[in-house]
Length: 144
Image 1: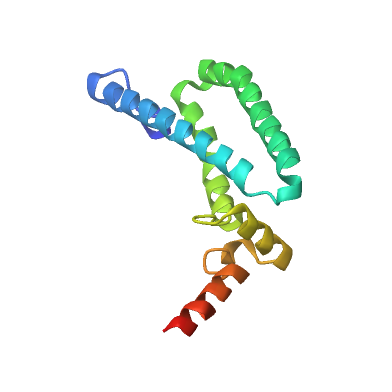
Image 2 (image 1 turned 90 degrees about the vertical axis):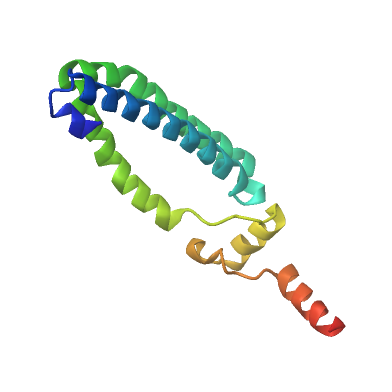
């Protein structure tokens, strides 16, 4: 969207591309919002889960309120080039999230708690074998 804003987007082709990019950005933001809610409610350690979810949602909503007031002013001044601000914030945020967001696929709250207690680094959650998984492997080995 930002790059299109640097050109004459009032013609039909670039205008259509701008509308498509806007719809796509809205779809991606909606998906990201639901994903972040899942991380907020699933990832914190059990004893901190309610408090962490509350603070996390409050922080996200504060950002939403901030942008609700500031984006119209930015659009009035910078027009479509406002998207450069979001590109500038989004790229470092995506890189940071890649390194600090743990992989919780197929993990129960008990397994997540165990990994927190064991001090497993967040990037190593994917391949970590919990106590239950280790015991299951041993018991399966006994049956064969």
